[in-house]
Image (tube, rainbow, N blue to C red):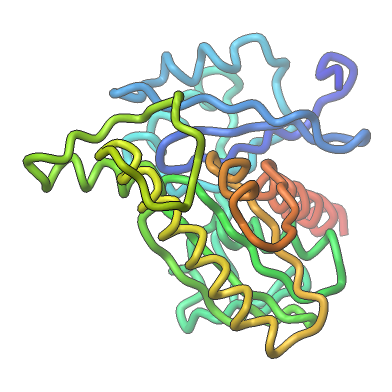
Length: 261
């Protein structure tokens, strides 16, 4: 998609460990780009990502990152384009969904946007699994009622906690290990298999539990570890890496329509 032929909307998913973004216009959503945060996230970091972009029509953001990331993000958009960010907050009701949270705004905006995005894909009940820094699971029935969710540490967070709180378990990411759920015979392999089994069996248990109550339950996977997990699950799921951005596109369209009415 050529951002020089049309003034488009910049959609940003500011997660806990990485930022993802895409442009949205009349031709739809561009390919998602992603970048892991440096140790200290500054205006320069964001400026380097977006200095070549033409001024967007507006910037719509889901942000669950730290306050320092949010402040740098706001300042960057102000300095680059003199734009105030539209920050998405979870609603009690909207976009065909009803939020299960008593206090709707307490639900992470990334989870809300991911459910909005998933709700556009199929009329069936669905699970949204986001496998990022944290692992989140949300269940939505076939009439758009969010039934609630689960949050646990994600794969990288589990590794980090083992490294931080054990003296003898030296944890490091190993690319030479094939992901496995089987018993292992080295500490490194034991750690990886234990983490993967914990994550996979939790997802499978929720899928089995909720499948008893609905027909044709779909499962959508997003997040940095989605591909790894998809290969280990015992049931078929659909990987949608840009699910949050798809939800942001829906909210941005609704904002534009409301503004024009």
